[in-house]
Structure formats: structure tokens, C-alpha cells
Length: 316
Length: 324
Image (cartoon, rainbow over the protein chains, first blue to last red):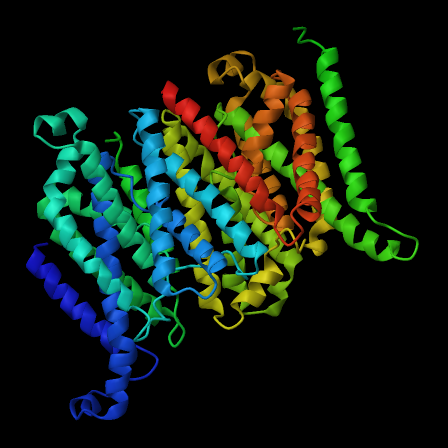
């Protein structure tokens, strides 16, 4: 599918997303600028649409960057402890500074995400294994361990009723005033686009990068920082959206090859479309209730990930 | 080492493990008991202890046997997603029948139906799944973990679709956790576990020989595929029992099976299995006491066990990863 077609799809799905909801959107009233439909649109529907778009783009681009940097198809914020560390940071923000602003929590979440991902990358380097499967395995396990520490503190300090649903991605709570922080992801997405080629080069190894006059380590740091910022923004505002950063870039690479700069836009668009579609499904299945996006993606994402592994008879 | 009979050292270790389990169980039941409150405490603690014993035994059996028939030390039924599969089957039973008659909401009936489904899936689906993938252990493991996540999310999804309002009520009633042990299933589970243990005893010699690999085992007169199939069914039921009683404890199995093999230095299942059971009980009961006395309660033991087991698992993965 070309980028134009993807964009058209995004527009169609976005309109769908604006129209679907518990409250029926009265279109004639909207055209006449009556108060109720306009308020539904500006208070709830548009914020929701924008946050879906941002989250979808941010998570899938994060995954793409990580896969280029590590040259491993199965590394993503989900499988490199980034999301779990971000959650932990958010929890510590709540614990240590109870009355703090969202910004402070965001900063803590970012710092934890950064630390966790760097730790993972360090282990990955020291491992020096050629087996590509073992890297996401270690990442998933580390994520579990981090998660159990987070749950421990959350239960201990009465911040959590139910481990399962805590921090599950959910767009239902998004209203005006509760998502604007996501706009912060814009400059970092631009930065990612500017650095795209360099990430590819850094992924080729230290020597190769040095030959081309680049310091692989610096590039890697920049890349991971961008990923940590984007991930923590999404975790803070929406909750965790697993697998998106893993499956979307893989699907794009399958059809388009490995050129990061060319794939950036496609990956972002596909991520946004995927999330839009899943969110719509989640809202329609048990209408007027809705299924949280984290759960929907958990089901769909794990299936697609499974298919990706099973298809790949000879690991990359 | 004299392999014909258990050595003195092995007997000692087994004895010490048994003693520790016994003492821990005693502390768990009789802690802080006075003549005025004993009936209340005992009526609450004994079922919980029983549930932990059954679960500990079930997980130990399932994990050790699973490792024997798959010839490796990384895979266990839990990391391969079997306990999530059980939760999923339980949900499917509810999904299909729960709305048509409230009779099916009876936990015992649901338990038996899900148990049957579990044994069926283990016999029919698992062998083919294991056969094709034996070359690449890590891939198989990743697939197992993902299947686990998939079944878990799908179960929550179906529970939510069934009844968005009473989602959490159904969840608490049907799905056990460490702090709400499923008492109605204790009797039925005890009988099942006793039966299974008797059956597995008959297979001990075959299992010992199977550690030598498929070809050698067949040469020595083991009807390999038959044993594997029966064992998979039994593993399925063990997992179902322990998950139904206190919910999933993902990393207990890997910890227990590996520690037992390391301590016993033996391939004999009549040595490994009892020590695995004791270690498992020590971990569960000791963990429960640790949580209550040191951490101040409220924390599910599974959290602590998964923390320790998860780190141990990463250690094994890193070690194996360097070799491969």
C-alpha cells in the first residue's frame, strides 16, 4: 500500500472514530453549530482521536528506531523493558511526590525508561550472542521482574486494586485537558526523522559507523533517549500499549525492505491506522461499553507477534 | 556415585528438606494460636495449607516431568503458557454455557469440564507442537510465552464481553488467587492428585530411562510416544489443579525443578520428585510466612516467587545463551 492510500485510510478511520461513541453525534446539529454536538466533539472525540494518532505513531516509530539500532527484529519498547521501566517511574512519581504535577511524573517516568533500556542494551552487548531470539526473551523476563517490583510497591502503598488492569492502555479517560502533553512527542518525532539514516548506520556496528565518521555510541544514546521520551509520554497519558512497536515496523519491513528513512512515514501511518482500527473495534464489540485498548492490542498484538516468529523459519 | 540405591547424602538432603517443610507448615498453622481463637484460625489456615501442599506438589510434578520429556532445563509448563491455557479454557466453558444456565457457574462443574478440556488439549495438540520445534529451544520458549500472554488477554477479553458490569465479580468468584483459595475444589483436587501420583509411580522407571534420549529409551524397551502422551495429559491435569486452587505462579516450576536436580545430582525420578515437592512446599509456605511476617501482608506470594524465579530464569537464559 502506498503512503497516499494509507493516508486516505487514516482520514476515513479518523472520521469513523469521531462518529462512534456512546452519545450519538447529531450531524445536522453539528453543522448548525448547536452546543451539545460541538461540545461532544471538542471535549471528548477530538482529544481521543488526536491521542490515538499520537500514541500509534510514537509507539511504532519507537519500535522502528530500536530495531534499527540493535539490528534485531524482535526488540521494541515492549521487549526491551522500556514500557515496564516507564511504568515503574510513574509509580515512584506517585509515591514520592504525591501532589506532584504531571510534568514531574513524566520526567521520572522518562528517566526510569531511559535507565531500564540502557541496562538492557548493556546486557545485550555483554551477551554477544548470535541467537536473535534470546534477546527479546531476556527483555521480556527483565520486564516481568521490573513489573513485580512495581506491583509490590503499588500494593504495599495501596495504590492498586487490581494488578491486571493497572496502567492498561485506555483511551476512554481522554478528555480535553488530559492529553495535551502528548503534543510534546511532535518535536521528537521530527528529530527521529532527521536522525533516521544515522540510526541505520549505528546499527551496523561501531567500526562501520566510525568508518563513516560517526560515533555509534552517541547515536545510540540519542536514539534510546528519543524512544524513552516517546514511550513515557504514551504510558503517562494513555497507559501501556504493548506490541505495537514490535509488529508494525516488522510488517512494514516485510513489504518494504530495511531503509529506515523511507519507512519512517509508512510505519507511523500504519501504526496510527492499526490503533485507530483496534480502538474502533474495542468500542463497537460491547457497545455501549468499551474494551480498553491495552487489552485489544494484547490479544491482536500477541497473535501477530506469534505469526511473525512462526513464519520466520530461519531467524534473522 | 552409587546409583543403584540412593546414597546416604541424598537421603540426608531429602530428610532435611522434608523436615523444613514440616516445620514451616507447623509454624504456618499454629502461629499465634490460643485456646480461645484456635477454631477460627485452624478453620482458615488448614484449607490454605492444604491448597498450598496440593499446588506445590502439582507444580513440582508437572515441571520435573515436563523437563524430562522435553529434554531440557528451561521449559516448564507454566512458562509455556499452560496455566494461562487453563484460565482460558475455564473462561470458554463459562462463555459457552454460563449464560444459558446458572448451573454451569458452579465452580466444581466448571473445574471438571475445564480439566477434561485441558487433558484433551495436552494430548492432542502439544505433541505435534513439541515435535516440530525440538531443534530450536529458544524459539519454542518465546512462542510459549507469547501463547501465555495471548490466552491471558483473550480470557480477560471474553470475560469482559460476557458481562461488562459484573466482570470483576465473576473474576473473583471463578478465578482463585493466593489470598482467596478455592475451598470448594479442595476435596476433589486431593483425590485427583493422589490418583495421579499413584499413576506416575508406575512410570518412574520409564521416565528415568527417557533422560537418555528418545532412541536409547526406545532401544531399552520404553514405548516412548505412549509415555509422552500419558505424561502430557497428567501434566495438563496437574497444572489445572494448581491453577484452579491458587492461580498461576509462573516461575515456581523452573526454580523447583532445577534446584531439585541440582541438589539430588540424580536422574532417578523417585529421588528428584520428592525433593522437588518439598522445595516447592518450602517456597510456597515459607514464602507465605515471609510475606506475612516480614513484608507485612497484603502481598501475594506469587509476586515474591515470580521475582526470585524471574531473576533465576534470566540467569539460566544468559548462561545458555552464551553457549549457543
